[in-house]
Length: 267
Image (cartoon, rainbow, N blue to C red; front, side):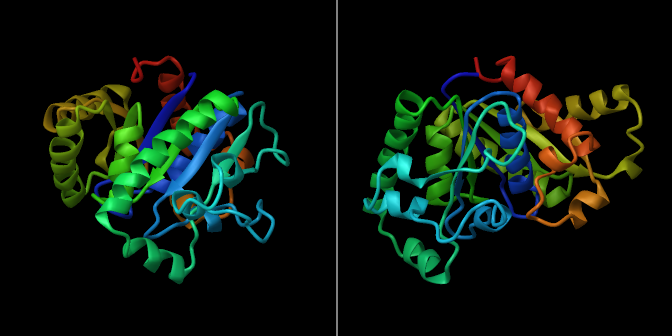
């Protein structure tokens, strides 16, 4: 998978989007890809917390600094793969989590937003052409905000994470038709945290549900991940793909990575 950008998005919060994005980025790096993993959720940034144990203070440059014209693209990337067993590199770009930075971004004008998408394209181009990056993973804001729209516009594939909650499904249908289809963007749906009480014990049962969802949402389902209580209760700073690579949650994400590497959804 060379020079591909994947946006991980959701219509609402609480779907497990960031957990999936983080571990998918780690899986691809562990397999040998050089991955740039960017936090584009400027209204509620979380990657600074997720990687707090792997990043030395202070962070010299945030993604906010790049979009405000204060640094080069390469200056926002922090290599967190040096202390882990990864064949490739995992480089992260963090959004500033301070209240002041969040408020500053919220107050930006529409003109600034237009400039931001141009800068995002330029950043991704620099990563691929100058820094030997194979794949960029964009963790976006849920819903329709300027940063999430910019991420979708600049991506080769958007993966929309949803649960089977009726509100999540309905809002996912809306965002698929009103955003992705309107922009003619390649999109796949990832179902997360479905209850094992649904008695989907066989692959046949899952295939039936997958077909129904694809018919309902009019987009392919790239994977279905059950709800694992220990994952929900795990410390957010733990990287499951590295610390527990045999966990069934990670095994399910491995299946998603297999499909991405085979370019099934990127051609």
